[in-house]
Amino acid sequence: MPPFDFKEFLPTVPLQPGVYLMKSRAGEVLYVGKARELRKRLSSYARIDQAQHGKTAMLLSQVRLIETIVTNTEKEALILESSLIKQHRPKYNVILRDDKSYPLLKVTVQEEWPRLVMTRRRVKDGARYFGPFSSPSAMWETIRYLNSLFPLRRCKEKSLRPKSRPCLNHQMGRCLAPCADKVSREEYQELVKNVLLVLEGKNQELVKELSRKMALASAELRFEEAAQLRDRIVSLNKTLEKQQVVAAHGRDQDVLGFVRQDASVAVALLFIRKGVIIGQQAFFLAEPVGSDPEVLTEVLSRFYGEEGRYLPQEILLPFAGTDDPLLAEWLSEEKGSAVAIACPQRGDRVRLLEMAETNAQQVLAAKKSKQASWQVLAEGLQKAFGLARLPERIECLDISNLGGKQAVGSLVCFAGGEMAKDRYRHYAIHTVEGPDDYAMMGEVLARRFAKGLAQGDMPDLFLVDGGKGQLGVAMHALAELGIPGGVELAGIAKEKAEEGEKLYRPGRKNPLILDRHSPVLLYLMRIRDEAHRYGITIHRRLRGKESLTSALEKIPGVGKGRKELLLRELGSMQRIAQASEAELGAVAGIGPALAAQIWEHLHGGEK
Image (cartoon, rainbow, N blue to C red):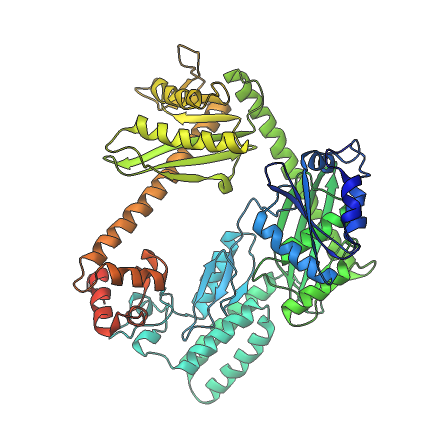
């Protein structure tokens, strides 16, 4: 019987659409759901068979409070549910995490002189986005290809600052130099239009248009221009030969593959644009709560609910979800035109679903293989260190400073053998002055362990970079909190004079020395090196910020007030450094003369 008293609670719940939030004793939101009729949906939880619903039963065992929010319509409930999940990120909801961050191509059509750039975030800024590209190398190949055919500007400024002479890219034939007035607005926009046609998969239309222009240029004896157009046509035709056309209709489709094995689910989404597969995105869900139709619906809500997500004309599913008509209505409103959700039973669209399912099966097989490898590695680590349980989550701390200044503690986390970057943290040092690494480590560890103790969020193994001294600091931090032995600790000391890496454990006098090629040792070294890398990255960012701050303060006429104005308007020191004179001058209280002085000072007079 779940600890939450449904019998007393259910009569107070209305038979109306709405959203419910399941909370723990500490007030943490564990799960957010929506329902057409709240009372009926919540009553189903009271009938859960714990033996058959392991993850759901685990959720209910932690629930101590359920809050409900009544809405006017089920669609309002769907939108509110999506918003609340983004806000709280409950651990029992489907949170789509991918092993990779797939890149996108962005054409900045909102700018006066558009650029083609790579990005990993799709935002509503007026630009055109294409992708995601499952292969970064293929994406960079596409950029190089388009730059060679249609040389748009490559400078980073959103608005161009006129120059007396163009940069090196123009001299190498890689840019038409709009900054130096070497190309007309009409000619440049024509190139932008051609780039968009290629990215939209309309190569054949572009080839026809370029062929027409080549014939016209040849007839008018503009042979150099005709030769350039000919070369572009040849290149585009080669690209057309490589494209895998999977649908003749030319519509934009997303095709979803769904495979379950035991409690785990793998999902693969194929992106088809104008009948051509341009990429895919895959997700592994360890133990999602709910039936397959419920999980499918939640996947769709989470994926397409992301801000700026491209919405195709049609979404193909292997089976019906719980809210397909409702989702289609919501997504159609977001897109501004019809988005159809279909479960085809025959024809070419079934073949696309089979292809997506094959991709989902590969994701599941790869994940299972990775889990099996991790199990062997974790057991080896448990045996080597004599741990009471498998070290599923390992954290490691690195202290970075420059002569005791700009000190920062950088903590990395590995879960299931992989980097868990959402758990990375960096700590500013507040109580230590001067180069005292032990004291700095003690401060950071005390803060990390105190918070972990309060929230019940401790790693299975905490790795410190160093030997007995650093390990002693970690042991002291735990003892001060009254939890000695509450976390398994280990130290890893760098190799000295070919002695090999040394591993230290509490209560062990001599270090543990593993074989140089031991998978356990290599894994621990990987974690330690990642902590170093993360620490150096954070430290460089701090140094760069301080350097730019100092540079600003040295400019005559820029005091504390104007520095704050610049930060408030432009957002960051980095953005100030990247801003053009026009952008600097547009900030209230700066003006054109001071803007030119600031730009000149920050850029050292470069032209």
